[in-house]
Structures are given as C-alpha cells and as structure tokens.
Amino acid sequence: MRPRLIAVLLLCCCLPAAGVVIDRIAVIVDKHAVKSSDIERDLRVTEFLNRAPLDTSVDAKRKAAERLIDQTVIREDMEKGGYAKSNSAEVDALVKRMVSERFAGSEARMQQELSRYGLTEAQLRIQLQWQMDVLTFFNERFRPGVLVTDDQVKSYYSQHRGELERQFPQLKTYQAMEPKIRASLEDEQLNKSFEDWLAAARKRARIVYRQEAFQ
Image (cartoon, rainbow, N blue to C red; front, side):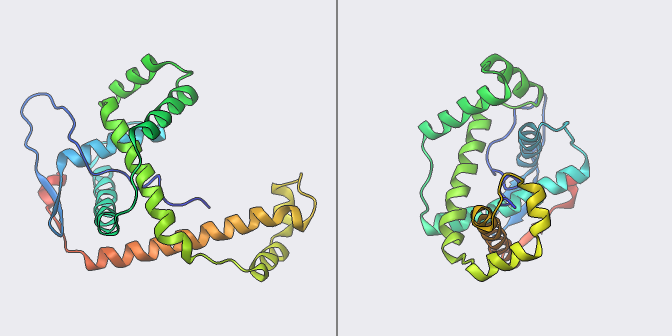
C-alpha cells in the first residue's frame, strides 16, 4: 500500500477565467479561506495528473473541497514544524520526467494537454512542488514512529504465503520476500499514522462550509 499522497493536492493559485466571475469563499478552515477558484483549479490539476476526464459537477467540487481542507490542515503543521522544502531544480527534474514518460519527450504535447484542462505550466509546477514538500513532511513527521517486528513479518508471510508466491513467483524463499513484506507493512503503519493524525487535526480545526459556493 502506498502513502495517501496523490490525493493530497495544493491550495494555491486561481485559474484564468473568461468574463466576470465571482470568486466566492467556499470553506473557511480556521483563519484560511478556500475559494471557488481554488476548488476549480484543484479539480483540473487532479484530473490532469490522473489522466481522468474533467468533471466539474457539484459532487466533484465537494470532493475537491475536502482535499483542500486536508491540505490546509497539513500546511499549518508543516509551517509550524519548519520542514524542508524542495527547490526549483527538483521541480525541473520532475517536470522533465513527466514530459519524457507521459508525452514521449514532447513539451509541446504537454502544453497542449495542459491547455485542454485549462491549466498553465506554472500551476502544474506549483502542484508538483507541493507534492514533493508533502512527501518530505510525511516521511519526517510519521516514518520515525513506524516499527515492524520480525514476528509481524513472519506472521504475515505464514498467513499470505500462497498469495505472495503468486504475486512474486521469482522470489522462492522467505528471505527473498522479507524485504517486500516489511516495506508493505511499514507503508500500512505509515498510512494509518497519517490518517489518524489528519482525522484528529480536522476535528480540532474550525471548518465552516458556504453551501452557496457549491451550487
């Protein structure tokens, strides 16, 4: 199981709009406002990264708002803890890898796809930097508390041996499978620690929804 990070997206920037648009406050999280434009941008960048059709329905907007609430809570803790942030060179490398892997090395194709989703490269870069920063926070904040014992690994192997052998036919022994089992169990613990913390942090936050912004 991988950390629940792709679901965690950035709260920043407004999309360019045609005509006159009223940018309403949709949610207030403590002293921070989530605006309609934030939700619109989040929908577009999430679906661009997931290669999904653009969905701007009310249900999709509500899901985006929940992601942005999570991000606001996380951002507050990141700022308090003074966690390290990625630099422009790291973002450059990530964009370059995306162009290579998703667009066959063609920057023009990436720009065309961004335009189709109503996004700019600047918005994408901010998003990618946010994801890297959250990954640093995730590992520094929660990984030190993860502990998987040898007995837990052996127990998992005993209970799931048949499944593991089908999944990893090239690994013939417990010793060969042990690192993968341990990594999987560590990820599960890491996810649970993060999700428990996030749920508690949301309960402590003052969250006010402006329902008219979701119409």
